[in-house]
Length: 207
Image (cartoon, rainbow, N blue to C red; front, side, top):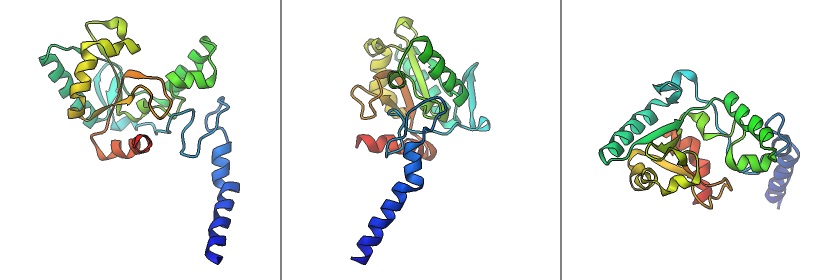
């Protein structure tokens, strides 16, 4: 009985102390939304920004962690051998740029925070900031870039068959448990210990 009382008391203390503050204080300035009990904000898990010295440049404006970059390059070559030209549309994105994309486009489109978060992560909550995520397109049909119609392309069909060999995983499939809009173009790398650690909460949610 004493042990049970101590446990209950400890939980109560947490809910009125640090944990309660974490759940009730808005984590992003200018965004009136709170974290859920599992740490998500409007469906998105928090992610740290990759240090600048941990990134490798593949082309102007395209940066990834070295292990993700190596596997992506191998995947691009393999796709090309099969007659599919994958295009890297976006990769590492600093938190400052994510903030601009989230708030500026939210205002431009007159979106609510929840509606905006379905298609773009709040700053500090984007997989792109880790240096392990990419947006991909099909060179043959650029009109499908960043569109759900990308799933009708040869590039998407190739990725669904082969991306796992290169440790890339579709982040937001249809009906995903995070409640984020379907993004057939958005893929994350899970082929290193660091990547697995960062994306483990998202993986755990779908188990």
